[in-house]
Image (cartoon, rainbow, N blue to C red):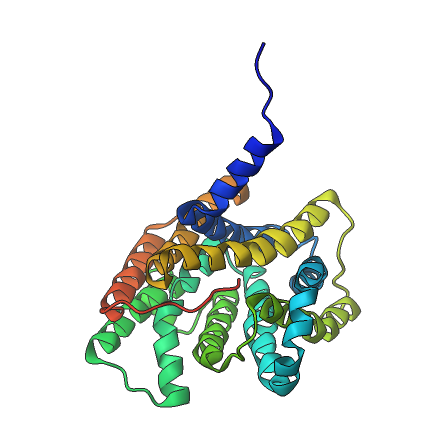
Length: 315
């Protein structure tokens, strides 16, 4: 007779998983990739701004009980730095996500994911503009190469589309979202010294507040959430997996192996996302996707010599 798995063995298995940075980081990237695919696949039953508001509202309610004690301890610092916390929540959580979801309602998930991979080259540009930190020549070369990759995806490999400005509207929304994320990441250095649970809860809550009027406006415009199982599953996924769990897993992964090594895993997002989009959405992978992604990766690799520690990513 087969011996049943005892509770302590189950607990040990969970503990071992939480101590394995590679498992945690791979799952994080899979969750983030799934966020893009779910947003693209459900925009007809869950409009983009509704998805953004529901995601951050539910994520706030989920994480709040776990963060309550830490929030109380951090309250003096929160009161002192509430303006910066409000700005970070507005930019990095609310605005970025809303723009990204709008873009994904108008372009393919694969396009959105590949443009997303240009984030590492947009961050040093934002830092230069905001803080006047000079770019090294090798960074400039890498940025130029990665930007060529972004243009390759935007133009679908056809330079004439660039010259005639016949670009996909959704791709441009995604690109603007990436610029917002780069600005957010560049000012994260001003993040108040509070616990990550407090920071996550506050930024989630700020995003919920600022996306509420956008969600109401979307409803007035006639775009409503359809009460289907498809919609319910999509909302449940984006408010848990790429929000709360990915946040916890990424922070733990960075804690275990460091930011430099953990940052490499971010490049799995477009890979996982492309596979998911092909399997679940029936999207096609074209040669210009591969060429653009290759140029972006090459530019990121060049511009990151010597390696930098990437900022915390909340997608």
